[in-house]
Length: 502
Image (cartoon, rainbow, N blue to C red):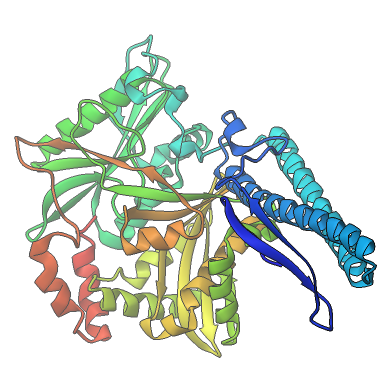
């Protein structure tokens, strides 16, 4: 049998084993192009639930539901035609057993499809009930608006403020404030001051805002980068995706930024870069980058379902090549750095020193780990992970170009995401990307959602916004030359260059 859709007539024919035509029926079947689905709830009814993964799952259910409903309508129509054909055959005294057998087979198919539809409805109900009882946040804290308001609309401070530099003796109260603040990120923690100082030798300037009772009510970390090649400027925070001020109120927040700008002028810096997740007026800003965040399900089986057929196929292909992976710490650093340094050379980017990653791993207060992928015993792909407040971030990852044909990168990210889910993380941060760039598209295929980053600037004078990035045309020749250098040279020279690039 064949079917007609959108008023196109088709013939339905049933023929027995003697190829004798018993009956022919010509019909016109009208089907909607996009059937309206009437599940108990739909994604359009979920405005109160800010869960991208839930909406995506319900959209998948709707697609399955629509396909099954079309098939059900076709089968029921076919069964009705066959029943009429049985009546015609009886009147003519012709055999009806083949038709009855087909009717029975169609009835069983109809029953099975109805069961599948009911199962989908039950699945949708279960998802909605789970979402109703899920108290997890819709975004990591550093992406939630401070006090559910933009910074410029935060409540004002009722008391006078004192802004002063923070010393190592203040590390405890600094970290206590960071850990309690609902919008902090791991890079606000004081350990990163020591990491930057010991790895790069930079001057760091950490400011604290104190109220009249000498209680810390805001903070702002920054690092001065100064070289003849790249200039003199401050960044909060360099080498990482996030920074900016944390404060209890708008007065403390704005005052900290003002004082940091004054300090930059005292240091003859050309600009200060504040790496924020929300717009702050009246500072000029760049918004070319976004963070890619994935809300993780509670179970890895759901994660496997969420990533889709195309991604699963690439992971299965990687499995066929006999790859393996390890999760660890310091013991995996040599393998990590071997892959990372070679990949950075191939990208034309100066590489950090291995001591930089050692300095991070040495900070036992930080939740860090390395993931390695191997082909037999050869390291071919790697990731450096940092976790904080329910979010696992992957600030650095690399795969050898020779391993691309093995889908090693897909294998790496699947096992990292699975590990993040199984270890109870609520979010996975893929890091920053330029919209529609290759890395952006790679991260989006995993279901990651883009969230705008705002890098604000204080400028000394009326200079243009700085462009210290690989996309700057004046660096293209340098990048091309770097890609041809031996790896041992890039390991030797790279750390001296990259320490002055934020």
